[in-house]
Structures are given as C-alpha cells and as structure tokens.
Length: 261
Length: 334
Ligand SMILES: [Fe+2]
Ligand SMILES: [Fe+2]
Image 1 (cartoon, rainbow over the protein chains, first blue to last red):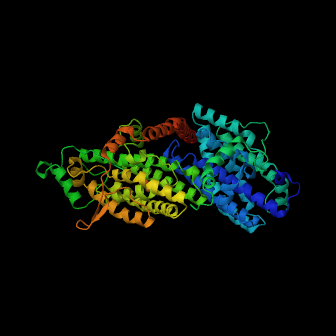
Image 2: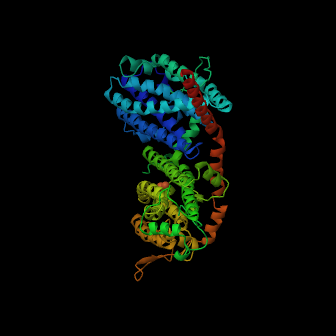
C-alpha cells in the first residue's frame, strides 16, 4: 500500500505502475473471457470469445514485458502475471468481476472496450515510442472488440423482453465500476505531464458519447448515479474476487516453484 | 475414432447385380475417385450414414473442447495459455466446418445438437476421460490429436466432397496440435521429478483410451464393409490402430517414457509392434454413458445450450425487428 499512495512517485516508478495497469487489465479480463471456453451459448461465440481472449493475452505479454523491462529487476511478463499477490495487481475492478451470465460478460466487455479504444487511441501519440507501438497494434484489436461487443449489446438490449431485462440488470450491476479508469491519481498526473499518457479524465466525454449511442440503440437506460468504486488500479483495495482468480491462474507456478513449462 | 461404430445399412455391401442403374452409376463414380457433391443423387443409406458419421465427428470436436478447456485457466505461462486457448478454439472451428458439411446433406446444426443433447447421437469415447494434470494437455495433443490425424488424413480422400474438403482444412490444424502436445510432453519429461511423474502418469491414463478411439476390430463388420465401398471409411480400425502404435512407440522412447503395456514388443516378422488390446468392456461402458466423465460432459453441453437460449432468442428477435424496420422504411420511401 505504501507505494500506491506515495505522494510523488518518480518518473520510472510511475511508468512501471502505468504499464502494470494496462497489462493487468488485459491479463485479468483475458482470463475471465477464457473461462467461457466451451460453454458459450453458440459455437460462433465460443470462437469469438477465444479470439478476444487471445488478443488480450497477447497484449498482456507486451505490456507486462515492457513493465518488467522498465523496472529492470529481471521480472518477465510471466513472473509478473503468475507470482504477484492481489495487492500488487493494478487492474481496474471492472475486469476482475465474475462473468455472471453471458449478458453480463458482454456488457462488461463493452464497457471496457469503449474505454480501451479511447485510451489506446491516445497512447498511439505517447511520447514513449514503445508505448505508442504497442498501443497501435492493440488499438486495432480493441476497435474490433468494441464493434463486436457493441453489436451484441444492441442486439440483446433491443431483442426480447428477457434479453433486455438481463442486459439492463448487467448494466446496473456494473455501473459503479465504470468510473474508476477515469479517476486520475499521482501516477496518471505524472504520465500526463510527461506526455506519456492522456489525463484519464479527458476521455470521459467521448466515452459517455459512445455509451449514449450504443446503449440508446440498445434501448437501455443509463444509470445516473455518478458514484464510482475505486481501489483496483491503485491496488489499494481489490474485490474479493481477484484472489480466487489468482488462486486458479497461479496455481501451477506456485505449487512447483522454478519449474519450466 | 472421432466417429466410432457408425452404422450403415446393416446389410453389408450391396452386390452390383442388385443395384439399380442409378446406384450402379453412383458406385462407378466412387470407384473412379470422383467426388459426390450435395446436389448429386445419392442412395438414402449413403446420406444417412454420412450424416451419422459427420455428425458424430462434429459432436466430438465440440465436446472435445471440455477436457482441454478444463486447463485454460490454470495454464502455467502466458504463452501456454494462448496456445491452449487457440487450440480449443480450433476444435470449435472444426465442429463448425463439420456441421456445415452435414448441413449440405439436409440436416440442420440445431437438429444435430438436439440429437447430441438427448443422447441419440454419440461423440468419441476419449472425451469422457478426465484431464487431471498439466501433462494431460501434452498427452491429449500428442495421443488424441495424433490418433485423430491417423483417421482423418485418409478421410481427406473420402468420396463426399464437402466432408473431404473439411478434412483437408482440419488435418492441417490437427498436425499442429499434435506437435504442440508433444512439445508439452517433451518439456515435462525433461523437467523436474514431479513433472516427469506427471508425464508418465498422463501416458498411463491416456494410452488405452487412445487405442480405443479407433473402435473395436471391424474386420467382419457389415457396416464397415459398406462404408469402405462408399469410401467414407478408408481403412479398417485395426489397420489404423496398428499404424498409431507403430508411430507412437518411438515417440514415447524419445521422451524417455514407458508405454503401459508389458507385452509391447517389435515383431520383426510382421514389421509392426505387437501390443495388448484395450479393455473393450470399458469401451462399451463409456459408450453407453458410464465413462468417468460422461455425465459431466453432457451436463456442461446441456447447460451451455439451455443457459444460452435467451441469448439466441434475443439476437433472433433483434434480427427480425431490424428486418421489419428496413421493410417498413422501404415501403415508406416508395
Ligand atoms: Fe479437431
Ligand atoms: Fe485437434
């Protein structure tokens, strides 16, 4: 916790922290998505979700790989993914929430994709060329994810009464987790000042426009409560769910330390 | 195999003199290695047998996602996780190609799915075995995909065009899967003591179930004889099993693992390995639903289908609304 609330991180510390946030988001969401494998409602969705999962795992390797490199302590993408405990994770709370039904999984994906596309778009102009390069590649994938998740949210919102009810429930449940990525802290401020990343708050207006367009077409009601649950991206207070996810994901590495797979 | 004990007419090969002129012309085309295409005339029994075979094969790909899906969330590295996820995704894709091939014979994917879920149609016995350690991901790729390739490579030449083309696409990916599986085994067999133990244990558990994949001896089976005359089955089960054993034994030696068969030895005279038959009682138990995982596998598929009903209905309703709106807009514009 000390590191997370430290008033003035150095540029290097902030950069590592920022990269962990990007990589942990894709790691944890990719993991959640992969939990569906073989259990989706139609074969095409099994295939599409696997694609999304694969893109996110690939992005994780790049972001966490770079985080380890910048940190310079010999940690790799794998050691960062498999050997840190809950308090060292920097993903937003939204992505660690359990899948719920397929509707909640899709709504979570849409709410994430809509932010991810904007963030990556801005990161292509990062002062750090390595970040710009990854963002360029990841941005194309994220744009495709957003197209898909938007279409599905619209189709299910404006589908049957039951599918609309489920999508509205999903949106209401996830709403308190929507605000977190837009809340700046010392890390974000430093990254913005250095031209590495945008001020996260500056993405909100465009994000809300995407939500109004897609959720409007989906005939869903956007909740008005601006309250945001925080604590994921700073690592200060994750949900109870993350520990269980890590227990499963990290088990082999923890049970057989040092083995090569 | 992925399609085990597929029944054909049940009457053996129809003698040429009993064939109608149409049937004779059909058999001549097959004998001349011409492909039969969906619009061509074909005997009813040919169509029915193919639907059973392709359907069973498709179901095997779908249920086959589950034993490996069981380890995706526990894969030990990011790369292994990506490779496994991509592999299971390929299997779903194989299911899709095969359902499409079956649809050209006049049966829908939904009908076939209902037949799977009701238990009227089967899937390969192999997917009713549990995957218990990470080494099982190696063993499944190496042995199960390996056995699948044995059967599917000849099927690339099968008489039915859409099935043959599906097999050509699928085989490319299967050989990739087998190499990846073998690579995991290699890593484990050369790893720590615990990893070696996992590798040997995986081979012990998957060896006989893999041999069962080819089905019991069908030298005297009337179904097989007819299917072979139609070229929807190319080799006998025993031929394929022998080929599989001959190919796999040296691979196991390279890994430093031992095949769990005390009677396995090279037979100089035959130019093949002699080996023990699997326990066919166990095979028939698994087929009738009493394998270690039958209940769980079917429950997983039924849940996916039942829990997904609202999703499928929702999207259908949306497509219908969109169509109606487009039609209304068109009328308004006119
Ligand atoms: Fe396959
Ligand atoms: Fe395969």
